[in-house]
Length: 114
Image (cartoon, rainbow, N blue to C red; front, side):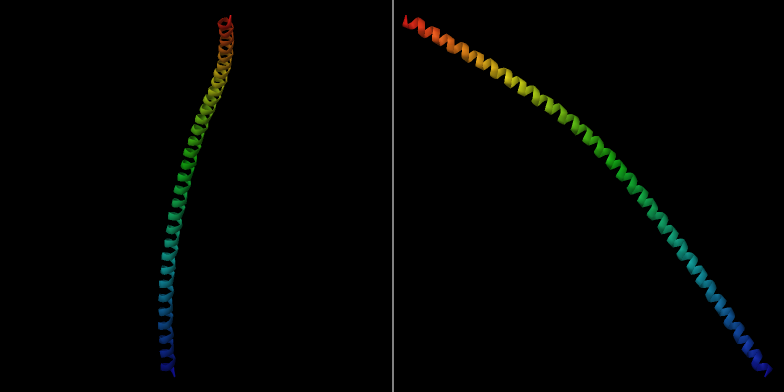
């Protein structure tokens, strides 16, 4: 009876040692997975920060380009307005010249017929 109980105790002790070994292996594996997950999270955070930085730089560049384009548009609109005024002035001068030419022709015709 004592031998049986001793064998059972040895068997249970061996089972307990094996369970402790398995538990330690699982703890180490969990710790390694946890470390790996933390490293992956760190890498993803770094990527996110880098992408955010790049996005901000692109936004600043685009804003700068927009400001430059708005400046160019303002210059072109001013040039367009200047050209319209010049066209209006030239049309007025042309009308005056045509009126003078018409008067000159009338006077000329009057002199020719006299």
